[in-house]
Image 1 (cartoon, rainbow, N blue to C red):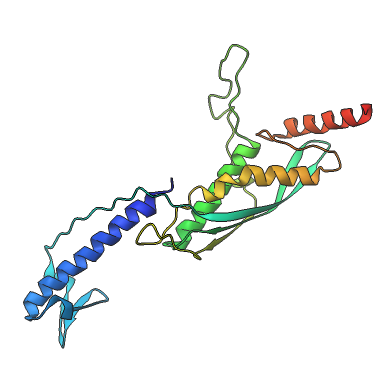
Image 2 (cartoon, rainbow, N blue to C red):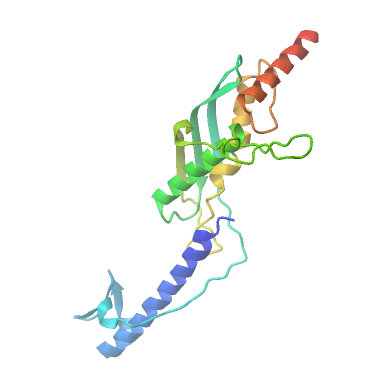
Length: 229
């Protein structure tokens, strides 16, 4: 459920907030003032002209927990441009764009890598990954010699647009899960792009993976039906 930042991140947030308040109280006792009069800025606590570093208040420990039963969902869209060689069933991804609103972006670099990786994982399920069984139910793709995964050499251009338009109201950070956003729409987006590229043939692929042999068979079947119509 893409809960790492939503749950772990918010647990860190509430613990950090409580920790700062505890430090304010400890600093106020040193300064001889009220906790509300102590300022926290750039890792230092100050009261008037007096200041304290974190090292001056070493030894304080704060524990907090965060609990939330409400899920968060990011929203987005995928667009893909493909070229299909009808003679062989080979598909080339010319361009892939995904846009996603993830609420509050905590780490842009990590988020970008997460979305690109999810798209690549989705492309693997579209073109490569398949569990094959023989007539006796024996798995035929039980090792990576037979079960293919995408590698860096076959990753196309993937452009990711990550937006923080609508923070989630269900957690203090306003973060939404972003892990599945790059993955869920991949199969439908690519299959529809292939159907668009082959609309003159009249096929609408609805079963993955779309390996070259399988796509070639669909094209040949459609051509045969057109020839007998």
